[in-house]
Length: 234
Image (cartoon, rainbow, N blue to C red; front, top):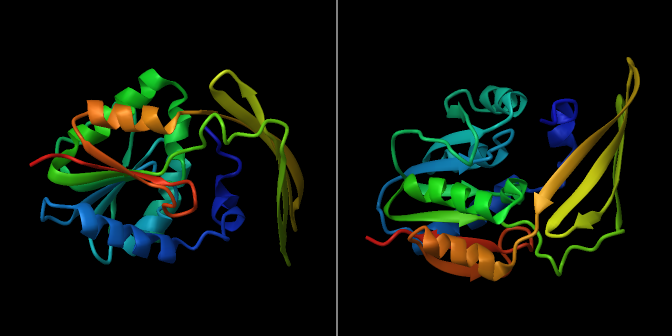
């Protein structure tokens, strides 16, 4: 797990407008949800930024594999129930009207077999008429190996430089985030290795259909990567 970067996660991704994303998500949910209830589960919820806004409309819960992420999420929204679990095999013993998995977290399942397990697990937690919304990672054609990426943070008492180079092996994309972080206490350097599976749009849709869902694909989605919207038949 990526523990060293967690305290800086929200600063690095401060460019994301979670309020706008949550509002758009609610519009999509209203359009497709038929279950009639207000229970929502965020799988791979991270630091709980989406739930901070979604909890105003839904009775929300979050789930993540990172203890450190969940600690931040719990501090941000003390009234929300969070679960430490893996998206591949979690069992909360109850069903929800909406299950979401955003910010391309689904890519971390890496393989098609694991994708089938994760989607099946999420689908099993849906009520009839409920919706599963997944924001995908990139497709094999859209991933560009050799591309250099960088993020920079320049605050009075915090400086961050994060760089990476895109690589690929078969259907697995991978990259090393090189962090250089400066605070009044000193400067630290570390590297985090990330691996995400590259799935075709048809593969994602197929897995969701196999899990018993009626599926449509929204090309734009929340951030330009699209959204898979699956509804469990009533």
